[in-house]
Length: 354
Image 1 (cartoon, rainbow, N blue to C red):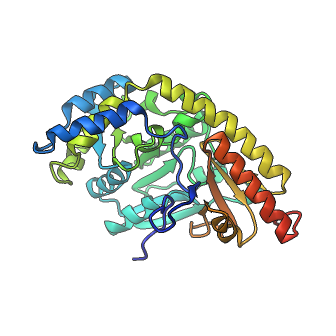
Image 2 (image 1 turned 120 degrees about the horizontal axis):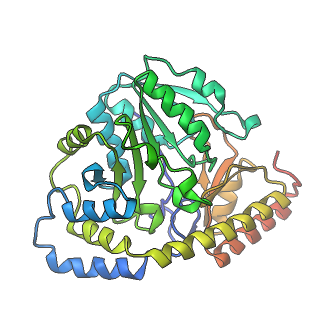
């Protein structure tokens, strides 16, 4: 199987400003860094199996019972564990979307069908998506806001989708890892439906919210405790390190940090969208902490020459060469990106990329 390409490959491209990975632009909180340092005193110990302390802290943060929480070595591990536990035969994915869903599904021999989102509709889900749902589908992954497009699906649509999934016995997994960076995230989360629906799984991560990608810590919420036990049995007992558990406990206390990070994202998101559109780049969705746009086929290489690393989205199912994703970073870094794009635009002598 061809290995999927992701953003954040700063090891291959050092000394660049990384716009290819979408984390909180404030960087890792000082409290989390301090917790990581202190965890070194306990490296001789095995991690707490079952991470009950962390589960209780997450439960309190999310206002759900700790018994409905499962943690993983990043959200990616939970995607794989869910597929191993459910053992689906057929799954449906919108396209484009996060590549790890398909890879995890295919790893358990599941057939994957795609519903291709159209550029003409701004890559948004439509009623046609609901019409293709049938009883043969075992599992459906939906990312909200979607990655890489940043398109946010409304609560009304999600309610219709959940009702149909329950009717047709389709297990619904909603990835809310980027929901912290949208306006009024409480209006879009599916948490209110958890207790009444055991066939709903919500995926969340510390990675993006707290800029902790290197720690590897994600979690899921689900009222089906039997399923969570099956997922736990599908991995080894010490999947969360001492460092990850301590970092997670510290991160959940960073309330002011989250407020500042969200405010910076919303302000800089508007700046980047306006700047890109004024230069002739078509922008779609982009309601999260990243901007999804079209540009010349050579833009990734041109930006790399300027010391900037974009996410080339040409390898996503449903997309072709010329689609890009850029993280919303600090004001100074975003200005550097805009200046570089203006320079590339002048040198290339083009007015509009398409």
